Image 1 (cartoon, rainbow, N blue to C red):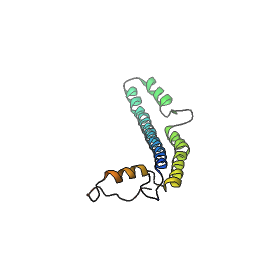
Image 2: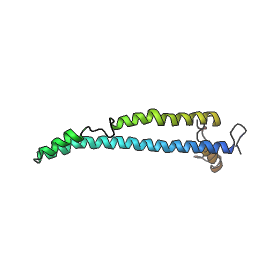
Image 3: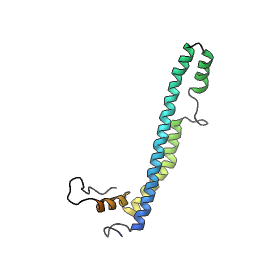
Image 4: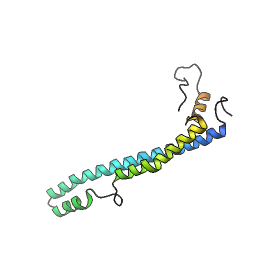
Length: 138
């Protein structure tokens, strides 16, 4: 049951909450994609040191193979990790965020975490410092 007449019913709040949870999961996946991007770039730059060390240790053929075959190699056909991120951000991620924004805007007045707002109302101690309600989320 809605906490006020201006709020949507519980089933709608629950449904939007599930959608927002899915978006939050996509946000985590996106973070892992950025971590993959950073780690791959770090490894690529570390190859410079490995090649130089192999050169200094008397193994120029291995150093040259690293320089010509590994450094700068695409992680997928025709793509470095920054290109994966851009395609993900501009495609799937943008569509997912946009759909979530549109649905939350239509059904909950843009309040993505209305379910959590309701929980906060019920679990806080009215008048106690640190338990203030604060502004509704948007």
